[in-house]
Amino acid sequence: MLHAYTISTNPSYYHQNEEISLLSGQNFGLAARMGLGLAQNGGSGVKPRLFSVEEAAVYLGRSKEAVEHMIGAGKLAVVRADRRIFLDVRDLDRWIEANKI
Image (cartoon, rainbow, N blue to C red):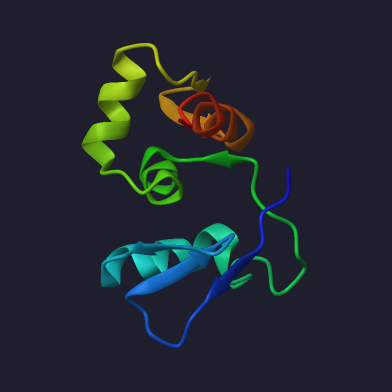
């Protein structure tokens, strides 16, 4: 599933499929590195498939601690590489779809 992202000129907000989420200044830079503004890939259009916990938190609009709690509760699957933990964007999308009302 591809998502269309647009970073506005106001660094406090980003738009994802016409939904607006508040981002702090720190998360705005993280969002740009994630590819939400194509800054990470030099404009190649390739989106990362694995997110760090921090990146997944920005993607879901949750705090890092909330995502860690969801992982601990078994609500989100993780990919472990050595001691690092990643979350697959497809699993995040499935969680979003499963929790829609």
